[in-house]
Image (cartoon, rainbow, N blue to C red; front, side, top):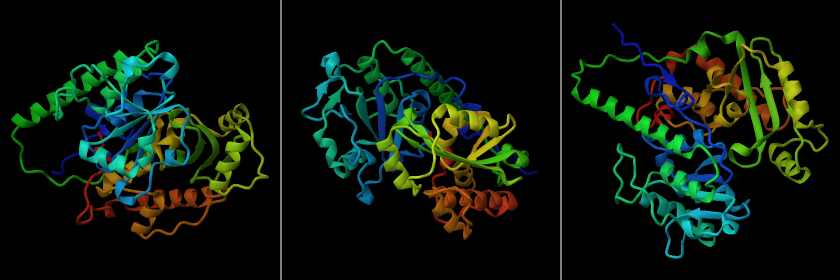
Length: 386
């Protein structure tokens, strides 16, 4: 008898039995948090960055590859009034900062001390920023991962402790840590059960796609949202959607700041003369296209965060990673690995190739998911990120 694979949450990227989505409060932090994450931390099942990204409304995560030699995106577009949370020799205690000197953007490095050193080396511009540190941190509550020193904190704990000092009037930080405690307790309980249980030899698990992907194909809507602005404060500038079942398409450009829009349009290959709507007019048009039973499918989580309900959304990158047991990279990389040819769709700029690629990948997944066997030498499933 073939064992049934366990249910999975594709938002928090955890098994459904330990899904954290329902328990996570939404904290409207005023200080923008930009996390520079070492690639080896990205898929750790007990990492805390995803917890911070889902719980803080003004937070962005950027995976920075030191081996590539390419600095962070912030290096060429630095934010004003930015500080780095890092205990360097010239760092100032957060507790001593006057209100007038509190940063509006906080950069946090995620990784082991060795990995953080690599991030600092790859981003030399970080040395020129003001550095901050926590003078009196509370003991770490992170009981499922040992820290090198008793006063070291997990990334989530360090962020919450810093924000609580920078903006003490913001509500929700204690509730976020309580949800963090509950997740740790659940993880410890599950681990204890696994240690005492005697397992029979494992049967091979069948490859399984999310039910929304296989049972509601007539409701599929492929989605791509391009944005301007940092983190959760980002606003859409181009929204493209396609119903594969009927061929219906939606495309809208949204106007914000003329200078910012012009730069973004140039990067997206959009013509300067293409008309754009304000956000209220865009939302009215989108509501005319969207239907209550739509299942939105996207490659990047940002697209789903802006327009989709979590219970009616599927992240195709996570689906592919879970089936392949491999890291994905860009959509174009996955298409090349699978030998898929994507015909450009009828959209403006770079969205044409992207939407065509989404359609090709979706057709491939639905045609024969059993062919997606893990390849020799691959590791690290996207669905195992913590």
